[in-house]
Length: 106
Length: 432
Image (cartoon, rainbow over the protein chains, first blue to last red):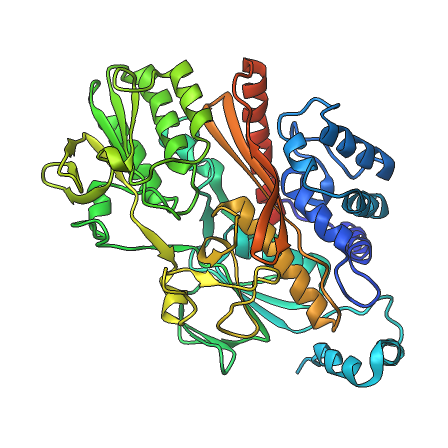
């Protein structure tokens, strides 16, 4: 592992605090959007950052995520696996996960 | 001692939510949000435990998280079949715990010798005892030695199970390398439920891939206790296309009622015998033992009569002990299969419950997903996926299924690529 400079520590700490505030409500509860997005992150990378051929989600607009997921549900978007996943979520859930990515985007 | 902020739950009952909010303001004056604190001990740092520890820290850096893990590195079962087939080195599936330490998780490399859920402490082989407010157990499986006659721990030297990755993985690989062309490889899957339902069939595929190139006159016989298996139609389609399937092909599958129920094994003869008396001789035998939840949770009295842990499927809290959560292969999780992805999904729900509870708040409604890729060849992938919801009867499948049949090479190659991307992602999510 390369040695990390103190400056990067400071930036990393700032980013971590922001990620926490986007995931956790004022009362300390984890938000439903954060939990839903965490399901996506298992394949799409920590924080939706993307992983090889699996695309990033954290740089998409909330509307784009919702619209694409709806297109997967309707079979209007080419898919290998996302059609099977998309059909499991309600519109409200799609909006919550999309809002989480929008909120935690840098 | 850390203040138990989850006492606030009691407070809410007394004064109502509005009063509690203003009291919170007084208690945590300058804080932007009410962070949770408390001590969580996680036993086992595989897909369930490592993911849970990581997300506890991501969502609530003030929670004190200690992971107890016997091994100093983690070798994944996912992709271990590619190591057995010789396409991947074991280093590629070996992970260190440094990333978790970097998140502020304390890692203690020791073995748990006892759980005292009344006194809320865990005792370790090294002599220490560790106290907890909340305990997360993700210990995986143990083998039911003796469920197949003559199958004891020593048998796994002659007939490796390779169902816990590491030395066993390499042993099976090396036996295949040493086998003569024209030899027979026998794979014996255990009866359901077991860790990684498609695993034995992916293994058959990747061994076939190795044999096709290196020892093309050889044969693989899957002698199966079960009547059906995971992704069955998709596997069989792939086997037909790539290796030949059936009595004249490279891969043959014998199901339970057709002589597949292995009742005993004989190391001296290198053979397995079914309940109906058929004996199959192999040059290499991969005997995967019958399974139950890890002995640790069994000895702690947390298992049911089938040997697995019943939990509240919304929170993963044990039905037998308060403030004790059981994740992954060891627990009964409704429709979810015993996969690494399932364990990670459960771990995130459990972390959300613990973080929210420790802050004295209500956790979000649960949500679960599973994605499980199998390789039939290095560039031929298939998958099963599902999204689940918590219903009255437990965790219930609401969408998903297996990859469609009759797809072109590009579709299969995309799924193989996604399988590798999935692996990179889920391990980064655990250890990064």
